[in-house]
Length: 95
Image (tube, rainbow, N blue to C red):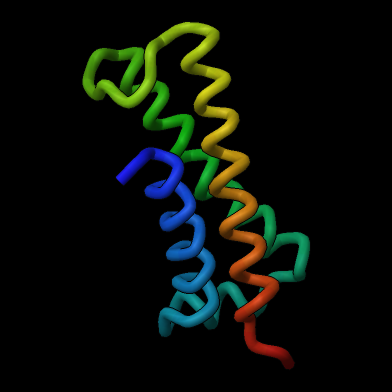
């Protein structure tokens, strides 16, 4: 599985989890549409930035710690965002 595929899967999983996991979905439903999007994107940003940071600290080998690696991290965040937001728009419950 490539990093792109794994990142897209994570975006889908986070979107479904926030929308349907009991307890978490109750809290998430109380947020405005903009807040929901920011929370979901924030999770992805933390994960991608964390993976890049761990690579720079030599604790993981997902990215090269240079400008090229940072650009790859930005691209992966975009993959996450598209998968996450598309899943939310396609499968979120209507009120």
